[in-house]
Every structure is written in C-alpha cells, then in structure tokens.
Amino acid sequence: MLGAVPAGPYRNYLAGLIYTGMRANEAAALQVGDVHLDARSIHVHRSFSTDLAGKIREYTPKSHKERDVPIPAALVPYLNEAIDGKSREALVFTGPKGGRINGSNVRRAVKWDELKTLLARSDYRIHDLRHTLATLLFDGGAAANDVQAIMGHSTLQMTERYSRARSDAARRGAERLDGLFLPGNNGPS
Image (cartoon, helix red, strand yellow):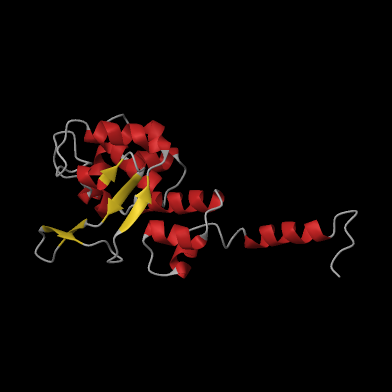
C-alpha cells in the first residue's frame, strides 16, 4: 500500500500508523520530542479529537494510558523525513504546508477510494492500518500481553479480536497434536 502513495508527508503518516499501531488521532498529535530513535520507541500520551463545538482539542489516548510503541527499522526513514529540521515541540506528521493532519485530509490527498480498489478492499479504513501491527506482532511470536501494551488496549480480549490469534488457533492446535502422533512418537501416555 505504501508503494502506491506518493513519497512525502502523507506516506510518512500512513507508515507511522502501519508500523506503530497508533490510532490516527494519536499519530496526528505526536510531537518530535515523543520520538526516541536511539531507544527505538515512541511515547504515546496525547491525541487530537474534535469536541462538541467542532474545535480540535488535545486529549489523552482513548485508553487513557500512556504507552511506548516500538520503532521498527522499516519506519526509521519515514520518521527521519518527517522530523528533519523540526523542534521538539513540533508535530511529527503534518501536511505538505505544515498544517495539522487528519483522516479526512489524508483520505482526500492519497485518493483513498482508489487505494481501496487497488488493494481489492472496498471496506478498508485508515483505522485498519492499526490492526496491521497487531497481526504482525502476533505473527512474529509476540506475547498477547505485550501486544496489548503496545496497542494500548484496555483488555486482552480486545487485543485478540484485532489479530489472527483466534482464527489460527485451530490450525496451531492441530500442528501441536500432529507432533504427538508423528511416526516414532508413541503418542500420549
């Protein structure tokens, strides 16, 4: 998907969502001082949201918990481009003219409907990029409680809902059972 988005601020933002699992409004509120490239982590502790009067306000993340998310090597070039020359208080992800980024202007700028067609995913939402990280972490063997902490989910059930952990459980169980009954193995005692 990233290859289909022109290089620049919108691709950087989408890469941030894919590789960190941050919510879109958390990534939009991320400041340069929250990014710790040497420690390979991002401290997530704020989010932008629109209040009832239509004004953009800063809030705590949805779970009301601060957390640290990993910075995989694949994300480093996007972050370097996004933070180059900015002060610690500046927003990491901004539009081409330095303005605040949000889901609406990103969808419009990257022609989201065309991307969905290209991906053959008519139901694809920007929020679904967040789920990509949970799936990748589980596929990489991460423990469910670690995935929960990184994603900022309030319950483990929420974490498992956004992964393939449950849908793969039967296959993994069958593989484990097959190991008990392979030739040369006398089976369970």
